[in-house]
Length: 255
Picture 1 (cartoon, rainbow, N blue to C red):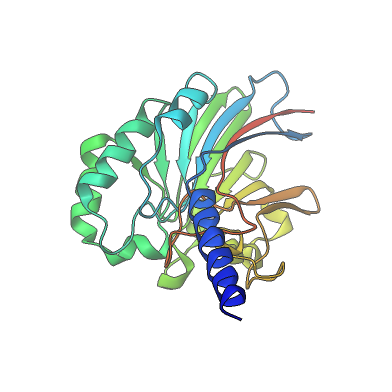
Picture 2 (picture 1 turned 135 degrees about the vertical axis):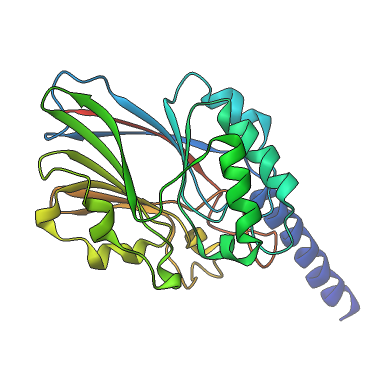
């Protein structure tokens, strides 16, 4: 009986070590999306998408692998959380800026820190905040590409309608929302082609294959596609099981 309990304890320790190591992995998924309505003749758009960084320090391995392979960086919310210093956020943002211009949307945990201090940091580093707003990434004759971002849904201030105000109906639209529940507000006639989200951590820990959230994946809604990322960091406990951390290099082109 003693050996049985010792075996159980040993297995538990090994599992915890495995889950901790799993949570520290550095993975980049390279994904290509073809859209008929992407401007024909325009260069492919290459996005480095990272969400849910939380307490992690972005590894140089990620930066080295992605540098020169992405045109812009999008942070899908939860850059940090309560207890994470602004200095750590600054170090992570400075690394991401080595890849290209950085765009940010708010996540629920980003509101746990000093808001004014975080916004000041964004201004200092020239991070572009997309809060119920949009920016134009391409304006070539009649060809337009817009990047939209909405506030975190938990704040009750997310306004997709405001983000759409600066976009023509015909423009190619990429929407970023921390919470994938934004899909409940997206209408087919708004012609949003790609939605990028995080928040769920892919469930983070799956016990016997079960977790409150599914693993990150790509969904199709008519002509629109929704990418939900497992995210890079963890929250609660620094452990993962069955939901590996991930970042993404997304190439969007006509096809």
